[in-house]
Amino acid sequence: MKRIITTDRLVIRPVEEGDCEAVHEYAGDPSIDMMIYLPNDTFEETKEFVKFAVSEWEKEDPEDMEYVVLLGGEIIGGVNLERIGDARVYEIGWTLRKDKRGYGYATEAAKALMDHAFKVLDAKQVQAHCDSRNQASEKVMKKLGMVLADDTGTRTYPKTGTVSGEYFYTLTSDVYFAG
Image (cartoon, rainbow, N blue to C red):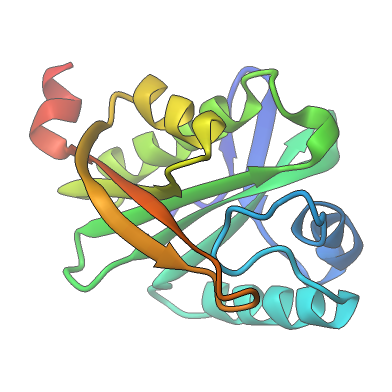
């Protein structure tokens, strides 16, 4: 399975043990308050996350593929594909360092990973969820060609107990390849 993905501006590669500090820079950012499992409150949480992600990559057929996004050799964020139930359905997600948001990097990285899902992993569907207040992530989903499948969901944040609306976007392989 091809694991390193490149775009015009970015390199997207599997997370590695030595990435903990760079990953914590975005995963521990308290402003990331509209993601279910982030922010990480401690560096130890990030280390455990990286350890899990690396262990997934050691599997012959990983179910949870965590990548880091590099710009000019510097890690600026992460993007993930997780197989959901059916072997050909994937959930995609992304997060970037605060200083790298608004430049199209999330869309570029997510598009490259979605292309990988459909063309290499033979996905029949790629889906994403976001907090209904997270306009930036919703904008990325739309730019990826995903369509709103459900806007009636809710999510509860485990760390705070906060409840919010949730959007569910999806793109199927037939629509992807027809476009």
